[in-house]
Image (cartoon, rainbow, N blue to C red; front, side):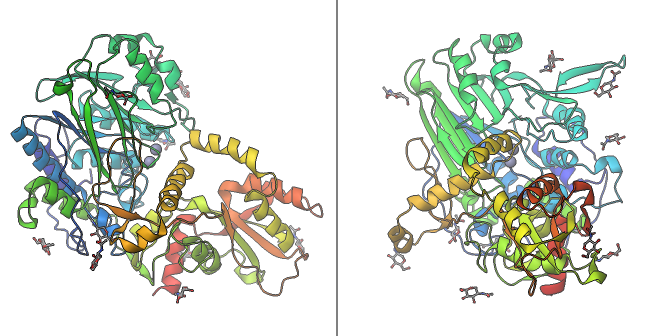
Length: 624
Ligand SMILES: *[C@@H]1O[C@H](CO)[C@@H](O)[C@H](O)[C@H]1NC(C)=O
Ligand SMILES: *[C@@H]1O[C@H](CO)[C@@H](O)[C@H](O)[C@H]1NC(C)=O
Ligand SMILES: *[C@@H]1O[C@H](CO)[C@@H](O)[C@H](O)[C@H]1NC(C)=O
Ligand SMILES: *[C@@H]1O[C@H](CO)[C@@H](O)[C@H](O)[C@H]1NC(C)=O
Ligand SMILES: *[C@@H]1O[C@H](CO)[C@@H](O)[C@H](O)[C@H]1NC(C)=O
Ligand SMILES: *[C@@H]1O[C@H](CO)[C@@H](O)[C@H](O)[C@H]1NC(C)=O
Ligand SMILES: *[C@@H]1O[C@H](CO)[C@@H](O)[C@H](O)[C@H]1NC(C)=O
Ligand SMILES: *[C@@H]1O[C@H](CO)[C@@H](O)[C@H](O)[C@H]1NC(C)=O
Ligand SMILES: *[C@@H]1O[C@H](CO)[C@@H](O)[C@H](O)[C@H]1NC(C)=O
Ligand SMILES: *[C@@H]1O[C@H](CO)[C@@H](O)[C@H](O)[C@H]1NC(C)=O
Ligand SMILES: [Zn+2]
Ligand SMILES: [Zn+2]
């Protein structure tokens, strides 16, 4: 095992109540390269203390590997600068406060632990056993490193069978029955060598809280269709008709805890909720959702609340409920809050100072994470980004747009290195899907971690020779919607959503918050950039008040400037694109011109450099 001891030891201390078998081998190395997670700028404290109830929940979801926090100096990044060690200290103090108040505090995670940073995706090639190089190994360590969630739900990390197998064999067992996968199965060989389909974790859990409240918990995944062979996602509508489901919810607990990788709005929670309400008309139901990366809250009735807590450790969710006071029929008083995870926020809510905040285990986790980052060489620096480049805060085209940077400079420069066509002198036309990017690039050091964070995809660049500029432009225009956009786009949107792509919903959310804010307010208030959440729950949800991040729509596909001096109808260009869309490109190319019939098999490798490497190659050339 390559996980540093500091992590394992810290985890053992943190989850002492929860015996498990992590690895206890020794690693004497000291981390020395990484900057500590102290905010790089002065931060304003939250607006007001949290409202506690008799049942309280700290919620995380879609953390996607951001365990070292957001460490860039450009705003709003410092708002999210807490690392997982800080979070662990926060949880420890909050548990102590809960004990003082004689109330329950649960820690819940709704999935998507990995895929998003170098820490989760930057495993070094070689040097580690091949079977250890998997995102789910990271997820397992993420679980072991941080404060163990009291209840966790499956992600849609079922794209690769082996990862699911690893979750089943190594990750889920550490939760002692509280890693819940009510509708997700894996097919494994039983001891007689026969294939059997079994739940990845537990279908449900019944347990008692610290204060003796009876809980029935379920863990639900949205109707995901992008799963690998050997894994099964049962539609939520079918799950609620299962005999085991009826049996699981039969006995009345003090509250139902529905945890899931499923957005609280515009998805299938009502199916689960209604199935329970049909049996228990007033039992409190707490729903903790995720997956669409937004902050959201709604109430399906007066004795239930549904909370979703953002993404990328940019949000820690808080839900409290006063169950006792409401008796068996009155509306329950709930509260919810979206915390910006940084030390100022955490210190404020735990009534600690910079000097008294850190716990020994929190510090050990930070140290261990930095060790891991060092092992993965994540601070390897390719160059220095001269400014911020954003995905949606700057218009396209503009010099602050990451898409402009990539189309105008990164592809032409980065793909010229190790180029299979270098000797030919043939001009090229490049274009790229905007969905190829996951995160902004911020001014300052541009590291291996930043490269993997901005674009983690290992796609190749292919080319078709002898394409005209007219045809190339027509392909990009067609992919961007052309004249027949609407209906087909809508159908595709459903397909993309069912395969796990939530960028459309997330962007809609950003746009709505930006457009809702009067310009005058933006200018007048001294508020700082961040999320401005409007949800359907009473009162203000954001813990620190912000002014909305600017939002600009971008085209789905962007192209590099046309090479100089090429006649628009001369078939002389290398038409370069991402291998992910080769079949679409060939089909459309053959529909926009008829002089040549292109085939997918003619598309050849344009460069050895992959999508998740090209920014680094560019930075080495231009950002030294
Ligand atoms: C959030 O970021 C802003 C800058 O946009 C900063 O001024 C503010 O103090 C930060 N607030 C918190 C709680 O981190
Ligand atoms: C899955 O893991 C097994 C055992 O570790 C390995 O033999 C197999 O090649 C892996 N399959 C894939 C597709 O990675
Ligand atoms: C089990 O299922 C796998 C994958 O579907 C298949 O390759 C294998 O042959 C099956 N094994 C048995 C014993 O049926
Ligand atoms: C999931 O596993 C259980 C237990 O083996 C089995 O009864 C059930 O049919 C499986 N569900 C699906 C949808 O495959
Ligand atoms: C209870 O909550 C429901 C749903 O939020 C609301 O429609 C209803 O008016 C509330 N009843 C009382 C008495 O407040
Ligand atoms: C917090 O303490 C650390 C060292 O313990 C120090 O480096 C840092 O500057 C302090 N931060 C603030 C805001 O005082
Ligand atoms: C980006 O554009 C702005 C506005 O046009 C200009 O002020 C700025 O100097 C440009 N920055 C760079 C690096 O070109
Ligand atoms: C180009 O390819 C060679 C051989 O594969 C490799 O050693 C070198 O690092 C590559 N250069 C760049 C800039 O990627
Ligand atoms: C592309 O055009 C060149 C010159 O016109 C020609 O020699 C070559 O065979 C063409 N390639 C293909 C694949 O059609
Ligand atoms: C904004 O800050 C200025 C000076 O820092 C202060 O005079 C003004 O009252 C503040 N405005 C608001 C709305 O807080
Ligand atoms: Zn996610
Ligand atoms: Zn997801």
